[in-house]
Image (cartoon, rainbow, N blue to C red):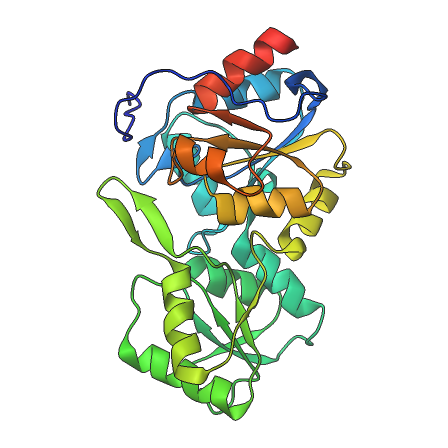
Length: 286
């Protein structure tokens, strides 16, 4: 399948290097977002296959770290394979996995959990031994993520459980999700409805929070000194990477524009049009 770029045509831009004392040659490990970086909806983005193959051929440790809670790692791997990328499930850390791991650190197996989410979240919690229940009166926790089958009844049940005192945990705060049609509501939109109805703010586990980055670095077995987070969102990928002590690379193939990156209070260390441009610069410096 020929990659199709979905952004408006723009003049090629040089990388925006914002830290004069650092260069790409020092980066030896990569964390990469998926939506808006590797693909957009079902469309592969420029340079994605070439960049990952380059990392694999150089034996550079990398990890896909995605806030999308709807898919299991196996489903993510299958989607990537259809796009020409062959990776193992160990290369994917989803916000669902991170959330389930967090919950396992504070609650025992068998704890009933009311879930708003899809198979990725249900499977991650079940694999950790939690009882996913439809009975909001029995739920000890409410865990919410993106859900394309969301109904008023689900929102009502989750709200009742939260108002009764069940801790409110969220996979990720992304308000929108990039698709071929444009930006559509994401998990953050679900959280906004629940927060409005319950007057309770959720504890977020995915980007930009520390929990998922701590898990990612432990998963890779590397430190932050030579690692970079590559993403398209200022408020999750870039902010989270910065909080974790990583270098950050913004790409323009997702939701953030060059102007928005440049005007940010804490902009990324570099900005590239897409992974193809990042790969070209990384090759030239290494």
